[in-house]
Amino acid sequence: MIEIRSRRNQHTPIYHLPPEIYSRIFEFACSEIDFGHGPIMLVSKLWREIALGTPSLWTKINQSGAFCTATCILRSKNAPLEIAFLYPDLGEDGDMSATACTPHEEQFKEQVVLLMPHIHRWRCLTLENIRPGHFWPEFCMAAPQLETLDLSWNYDSDLQEAPPPGTPHDLFAGVTPRLRSLQLEQISIPLHSSIYRGLVELTLDDVNLHDATADEFLGVLQACPRLESLHLANVSMLGPTPGPQSTVDLPRLSSIYIHIESCRAIRHILSYIASPSLKSLSTSINLGNGEAIHDVLPSNTAADFTRTMGNIHIDRLNFRLSAFRGGTKFLNIVGGNKESPSALSIWGSSSSLHSLLGGLFSHLSSTFNLRALEAISVDGLPDSDVILTDFRQLLIRCYEVRRLEFKGCWSSIPISLRPVGAEDLPCPKLSELSISSSTPIDGWNLIEMVSIRRAVFECSQEGEDAAAIQMLHITHSHPLDEEVIQLLGTLVPQFSYTSLSELDV
Image (cartoon, rainbow, N blue to C red; front, side):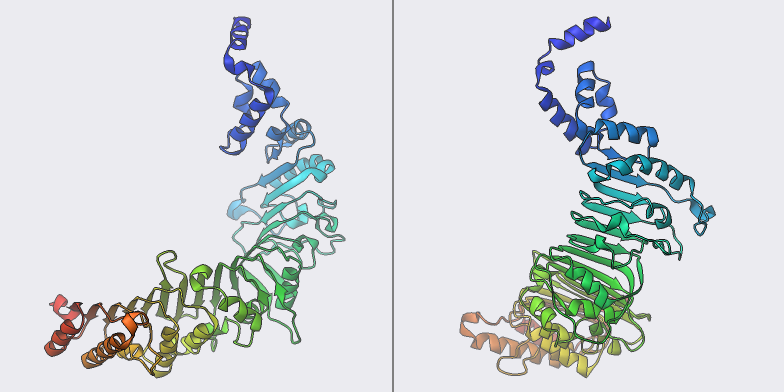
């Protein structure tokens, strides 16, 4: 019966496909849709023979055990290997401070002994929950083909895994010439290691760099001129040391995310990076007492940072800044356009927003190219003459903003939208305005602001450089005068007013 079925299969059209076509189909099935080669080998004798003769089907090695590892090494022949040992944590009962091997680490060592003679074929290596004290001594040989290295430690503890004391050699003997992607999570490797050279992607997550300074980290970036992505989340390092620092040119760098405990370290790193291709910049920081949001950003004298930011429209940059200093008061500013609704995002919390925001808006307006913003939403801006003046200067730079929304802001917000001089009209193309305030708003200030902006629009040439407010919505906890409501209704084509006190009744 088996012989009959075999002969019948040989007469089907698919049986006569070239073996190379089968191999490509099998490669796709095993890689693109994560279809194991086991079922393929059970279809027919022909398929089994082709699968056994296709080295690329046997290049993925995991923690399945020594027998499977040996089998894959043999059948993969000379093809590049993709190795992933993903072990679960041991739970709360596991003693991570012990030097003895865990069962997972014992299994890892059994398999890595088989893999080391083929280290010249390693292309990708992922280790999860293997301590450096157990993998570092094993990786003592060059890995000339290694392109991706991912080392992670997922235990929820204060124990930061680092190479064992007195380690006599660099990881992979300091030879990883093709390494392009490096990701470390709760694994600390000294910055002098050669694995930080020539990278395209660098991700450090929950990593304590111990005594390393921001200057030393800039040295790492200097050794990666083709870097495209930099991600530093919950990274601990010291601030900069006194002395000159050269510019780090990263022409391909498009994405930066930085959350470092030291505000000075963030500012120092950003100050000396020149990256004209930057598309995303996100920073997050827990501020100390006396530190403000603008302390995270480089000073106006940081020519490299200013040149990089000034040449990039904010909608191409996607700038996000989060600052936490405790307290219950918060600020949230979001700006963007149709293509990028949240290109500009600033969030902060503190017990005193006045000190938190000091100097922020003047810094933003002098550093960033805000021309591409078409809409801005502001929530929680405090009542302060100094902050009002700085915020107005920022709005003057927002030439294309057509929609403004203010929530929970100061009662004198209409003043910030009045022109200061002949050419100092905040948001000259503003046509939609929404104001929500729990403090009394001077209705006559609103009327004056709308009237002045309308006069500027009528005096402009065909309205090319300015626009009158066409839509105005006021949500207020204190009722406006009826006369004010009527006048605003005649000045603004689409005017609406909602009294929160009336809604409560």
